[in-house]
View: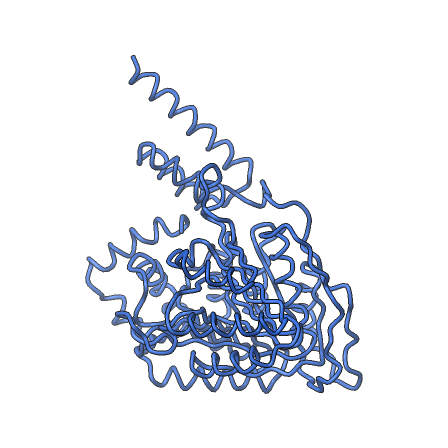
Amino acid sequence: MWYVIGITVYILIALAIVISLLLNGIRPSKTLAWLLAIFTIPVGGILLYLMLGRNRRKQQRYSGKPRAPEHQVTPESGQKPLSKREGQISRLIEGNTGFPLTSNNQVELLQDGSQTFSRIFEALKAARESIHVQYYIFEEGALADQLLRLFAQKEAEGVEVRLIYDSIGSLSLSRSYLNQLKEAGIEVYNFLPYRFGRFLTSLNYRNHRKIIVVDGKIAFTGGINISDKYLKGGDALGMWHDMHLMIRGSAAHHLNTVFINDWELVSGNQLEIKPPAVPGVQGKTRMQILASGPNDDFSLMEKLYFTLINSARKHVYITNPYIIPNHALMTALHTAALTGVDVRLLLSEKSDSVIVKLCVRSYFERFLRSGVRIFLYPEGFLHSKIITVDDRVCTIGTANVDDRSFQHNYEVNAVVFEQETASKLREYFERDCNKSLELNYRDFSQRPWRDRLAEGVARLISPLL
């Protein structure tokens, strides 16, 4: 009797989820994947859907759009206007985020942890008013201890220090360390903590951003988290390699606006968005900030990547450890390669997840067959998230090429419209490709059937990742 009642209730819940999937307009491939999970994994399938599958855009937790900068910046006079394709990218960003194109920026490319943290600590030590810090992974170790001491010193000097960390990405952060921060006067909040009663609704939506802003004038963003593995390795993957940006100018003010919006979300307190205090900046780099998240009306990061790929006429080079493209990006990459664009993907040979590695590799054969070139970087773990197009435009940030970054995570990327920066990134890319193993279609297509089977299974569940 109870068995029949249980089966009936389960079927009714499953049918309700099916109706929800259809009403929310989710992609057929993802719908089928969830149906497979629900009807083949008793109870567990429904729990997985409740944690990972619901569409935040249809059921937004946070109403209203984030505040955009209130103080617009007039473009530099005398600069060559953006090309038609670049203008389309810029309008996409401003029309959907409110962040306009800015022209008075200085940018510095920072490679790996040693160079990045050297510049970060230099800026932090010079702080006079405020330090805003936001990271997906904030991991204890020598680097975190050094930051704790510096934060405490700056707080004692009257500098306002605020810190946001992600409750899942920084799961290992101890209560002792957090208490030391708070005792020093630093304001600390975690993003969507996994509390009882909201665990199922918040687990899947993480803040993947990496931002530091000093005095609203100097900002840092990119792929590097707070972790000793960027300085000395420490795990089976070895040293982590990554790319970061240091920004002076109005774009730094816009990154500060992204932090302020997130601060309001986690703390409930609204900070003032002050005018950009950057009169001394003489840079001429044009760039925009794109912040995206599951509370957007559209998947903005996906649209940025799609537009960048489609704008390429000579080359599009992508560095990213997690390339699990949806149908639209697969089509864009295949089409670019088939029309003669030099399309190259640079990924790490090693991976921090077996399942993700198999998912990523499940797409390789079709890429290679269409003419996309794939390079596997052998030294440590390559964690950079970079796209460069035709030595004209490039983006560095936090977003991967997968549905998790497009649909579920809060991400931020800097888009730079400058030949010098784009050309430098192309040179770095080509240097790393020369160190890497290039895959060959014929050899890869003849890999063992066991590998192909494992990749096929991984790809089947990739819409759920």
